[in-house]
Amino acid sequence: MAELVDAHVSGACGVSRVGSSPTFGTKRDSYLALVLPPAYPFWRQKALDVFSQKYAQYGESWNELSLPSLIDLLYIKASRIRTLLRGEGAAATGESPIHDWIALANYAALTLAKLRQVSPRESLSAMYAEAQALLEKKNADYGDAWQHMRPLAFVEFILMKLARLRQMDSAPDENASAIADNLFDILNYALLYLSRYGDALATS
Image (cartoon, rainbow, N blue to C red; front, side, top):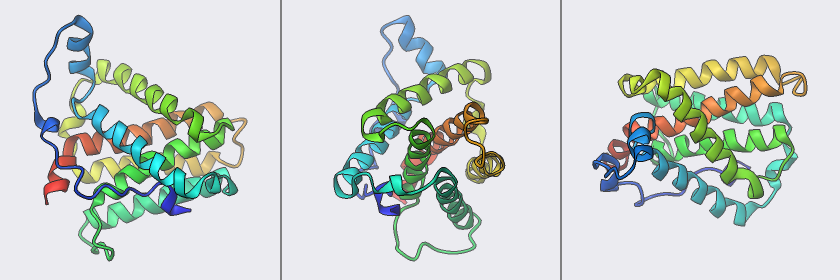
């Protein structure tokens, strides 16, 4: 199951566009420059591409998992990232941490699909678009404060969200809105981390 959304992106992540300055032609472009990291659309599309590759191999096998099990998978992945960031262990597979961050984003999207009882193949792109719209609204209030977050903070915020989710996932109907909010936050934290540190990881 884990293979469904784990990334296979070797050689595809070190791209100059992440640090480049975007060209603005409209007021909408200028607005997005303030509220959306320039690299965010790249990593969003990378996550969608990885999911499509894995879906072609594994289909709907993820659907065998309950909502709590999917949340536990998120917790396992986030805990592994925290261990690596703390320097308490090395990746035995030798894979880049980029794999884990993309997997976090896709696990969050899969869990949203389970919550909403929709097929991810048909709805994943729309959920990523919804996540981006939510990020734009939040960044309109908070600006670029996220750029000053250190790597460990991203995963610890995700683990904090997961602790909350594990208190709610036994009653998904009652807590659907709050669960969705936390999952969208997790998805966006993963893509923000990649927007901030992805190029450095790809070239390390």
